[in-house]
Image 1: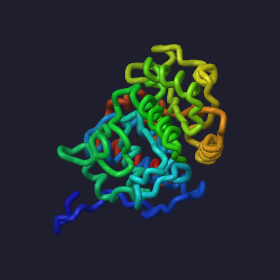
Image 2: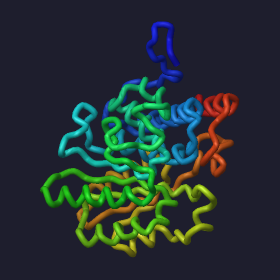
Image 3: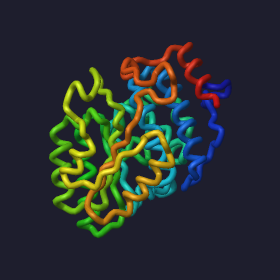
Length: 292
């Protein structure tokens, strides 16, 4: 929204405007709440879909940027930075909100999300802003990209770790399982994949489209150390992701059980919010629920 002097005014100002890494569990919870409010506003303002997919991964992204990733917003291109591939690019509003709240970009930039010429397109483009490592959204590409980055760290003797966040529907793609076969063969103990397992895909229940279950057992059979976790519990997520960062036995897969549309009662587990955007009345109702 433009003010009279032409500056940009945020429609929502966070309770904690300046988060400093690493965050406590209480601060991670607050960050997730700030992010959840923000992505709902962004969807409404830009008339951009995929809100349900963004809401399901909020805590995962908050924990990564708030407590796990070794990446400095003042030196976002350092060779030693951890790499994070946000493979489910359709939910990019969650990524952008984390980058803003953690100091990689100005909060006011979120107001331009999804508009013509914006640095924040609906699906990430390469290096559109600091913290975005790759163009994503064409599902099935993020894990192979991340695998290449993890392998490069081994070859160059660099200490960074690579994290990839994928959707469960993305596990339909053959390229995912090809990469899943290669990573253990190269002993990529510097690689972690997190699957946002919200049980929905664009056109229906994941279990009705491909036989993903038992998903954890599949990754384990491919040679990955495997964890299952409540994807909305920041304490559990933090513990598992930190534990994964210490493994010396090959790559790690974290199956994060989540709810599509999490945080808003009339959006939760409703796949209509894969493509719907909130009306003015729905925006007000959603933010009222989140005004804790």
